[in-house]
Length: 324
Length: 253
Image 1 (tube, rainbow over the protein chains, first blue to last red):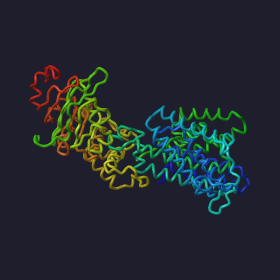
Image 2 (cartoon, each protein chain N blue to C red; image 1 turned 30 degrees about the horizontal axis):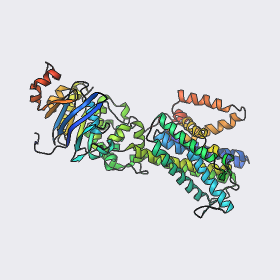
Image 3 (tube, chains in turn blue, yellow; image 1 turned 45 degrees about the horizontal axis):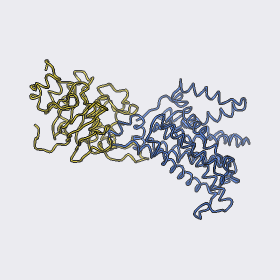
Image 4 (tube, helix red, strand yellow; image 1 turned 30 degrees about the vertical axis):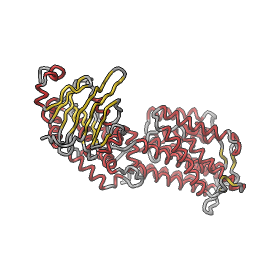
């Protein structure tokens, strides 16, 4: 028997695939881009969900990792296009797999550094210190003229992947969609593993975890770095979607948006970020066309979720989360 | 049945901890020998909790040493002391409430195996982890409640679960902080019988208010008053000790 939550997950996954396919068939390219945006935001939020949902680490600085992934893509592509060497004689590239690897490694490394300091605090202090680090990265990007500074950085041609024409929206969507599914698979495996057990237990009761002999700090730091890497990967894809990177990817609005996605969809739920990204982007599109004040209505919905449906959309549809 | 000659498993000497002007632990020395149950009693505010916090590492002592299994553990973290084999239960149950009883114990098993950095194999398919954990739950008679979230267990069941987790650590010594609290007469009796068996596995430092249990179980008793141990001895010696009678036991002892 398939559980109710898995059934809903399957439906959400099928829906996210069906919409762009239907849009492709009917020539409505715009909806493909919309679905790609959903997939990328869901991927970024899946990264955050590992830290926030499983580990209880409310990072208000994940925009830093999203932006670092984005800039990794932008900078490598710029050098790949111009042929100027990057550093130490290394050249840029327009190959997505290489860019992704660099994005993941760069974001994870920065996550390791930020986490090593931030995880010594907890609660509100953790939220504030992650925000502060992200703002540092933001202002650094703004004041770095070599890569566009405040104006951002354009990627003239979308990067390449295994001979596929990535400029066709459906192809690029499929790349993002498969990447999202892989990340969700990874999230699911980690959640059920020994590491995931320790991480979730540390959220529920830190003292208990230490008392059985597991140091919560190391577990959390590892989770934070993995989380940063996934969000960084999403940043690289986001840069390729827009063919543009700007400091706005690094701003605290972005960090907040990722948290909102997770709360809307369901904190710690496998498909919480997917459901949340769907709701968010559909809202932005549907209400954004009617009123510029669409975020006011989003705020109302968020308020409703926090007050009446703590489990988010998935909690509403599938009931309480179950642990083994 | 105390083996007096054996080296103590846990040896505390000259421990001092002050909070401002208050000396909560004032030169405490005590030891725990193989096979024994050593009870620590004392009125409220005597400093029992402060002492326990120092033994398990949540508080750092100002002075004095704590030796455990031949090592000085006074500077180690909580997790490191646990890995050395210090099995602790809490005055107020401390569990992962969303996890089932089974998964709580599985956490302790994986901690003992030192294998928390495995990222892919699902724990719920891990037969060796599950079987070991189930065996611990059976020992504390909690097997049929294995799949119930710890947060939904009764008070007494949570106590049993904590002991199962300490067992899963294959502890070299147990530090039980008021295991009888809130257990009810039946629960206390069966737990008393259980602890009597458990001592053969590893010695127990038992902090307890339930005097019936203490007198039934303890090989030795130490009495803590105002941060100082005023007496250590067998049940009979403690019952007769005039200082203890005035300070703590009163006339009904």
